[in-house]
Image 1: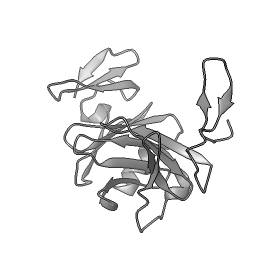
Image 2: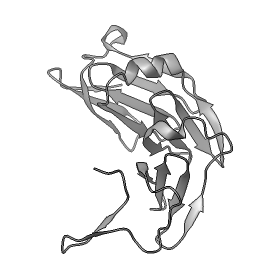
Image 3: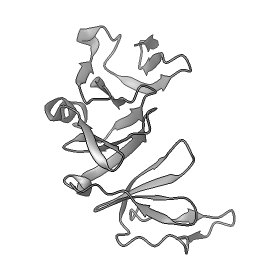
Image 4: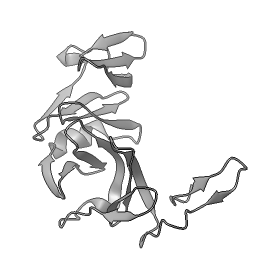
Length: 178
């Protein structure tokens, strides 16, 4: 509600963990990496918290951090960061890939979208009514819609199975293997 990070206990009390001291407390997105470490985007930073310490991972180029809406890890350890204007991949402290901004704007024209990382280092944006947007590990971007063979542009969910197949659930058209 107020975009602050809190820890909810079983007795219903809400508190910010004492160990978690963020200079900028407005949290805009959260993600968990393969090691189980929490990553936090604020309006000015990207940090990780291992339960005891904060580590700053903010790249030198902070353009676009103020509008981060979602983050997702990909199989190569890269962190895809999505805002209203851009989808970029943070890898080893630097932006290493950027998706096509015009295609992204068309895909996330509403706030009803979801970002997923895949096992190959890429990212998928699922946007209800707009199909899918796939960014390869290098940022090369491909939209997938009904015109491209999807059974529907109304994708409701996304899943990558252990063999690396990508599946999309649709409204009224079942599921599709992409």
